Length: 451
Image (cartoon, rainbow, N blue to C red; front, side, top):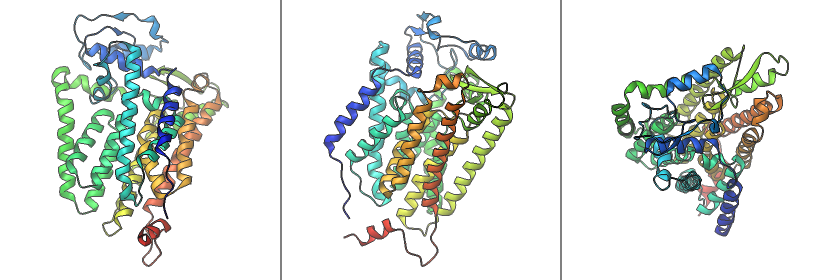
């Protein structure tokens, strides 16, 4: 059976529609990125975003409501040192994603455009990488087809798809998957190390790649990839430690350890809905760069959230280990790899204390290639519905969430349930092991019979 193809001529109009939809708005994180870059390069910066860890913590504890316009632009006498002179809530690899556009301009408006173009290019690169992954899943997908579906998915998610740095993580995850499937342990190590240095959480997906190699009797490749990944993290982080000090860098971990329940997390959604029954039980405070739900039930909810995330990750690892047995067909093992990577990230997003919608960018390319390669329209619709629900939460209903209306928290809960449903469906499908003698799935039978 020949697959239907989408015309490459659809790609340009869809991309233009995507750009036009984003052109008039600017996400707050773009301003933060630009301020960090300017401070690091010794240029004038907005002091609202560039502060020491102690200053931020004092303001968080005091619960001060502040606006960027209330803070002056500072002209530094020298370049500031990240982590030592001002807090950066991201690991050092973050600057690999946000600095390149800053080298080309000193104007914030131009930086926004360049940064969007840079992130869009990384998203396109991740989709092109997925074109190389698709044959390992038993399908042949064209670049134009994936770019069109990628544009649709990005439109469903909204402007954060290209106005936050997570497209870089999406590309690195795709490179990790492709390198694992094509026996390139050095590329896998570099991609995994860089992704970990950019956002930490992709380390969980790197464990899946290691599991794939070990279960496939390729332990030497897994060891080589682990060594290269460690060296890559060291190459990115050690210079920062030498300049800023280890304590300054560890403040990143302290910052995230102290974060309360972000309002897009499942636990915060439950507390937000319960607020309608007990109005004194919860409130929203703006701290740690996000709106967070606090109150008398927040601490138990936070503990339950962390426990649920740990259990969910462990279950994914156990299921992947079982399903990646070496005697399974290569196509089946490849599907387990792709789906296990997206599932472990999905459960962290759904059950963790921070569920920001930009993390969904990580799932977009691999989620699309899995749904398209396996011909699973339900998985595709669930993924697009999750992305759309995320945009309904932020930015469309974030103001209502800050006012503790129940309906935006109901949307948050629905989004996270859709995410878990999508991840669970694809994971169960990929990891299901047919008993001996049973007929293989229809898609595999068609591939075997095809000339």
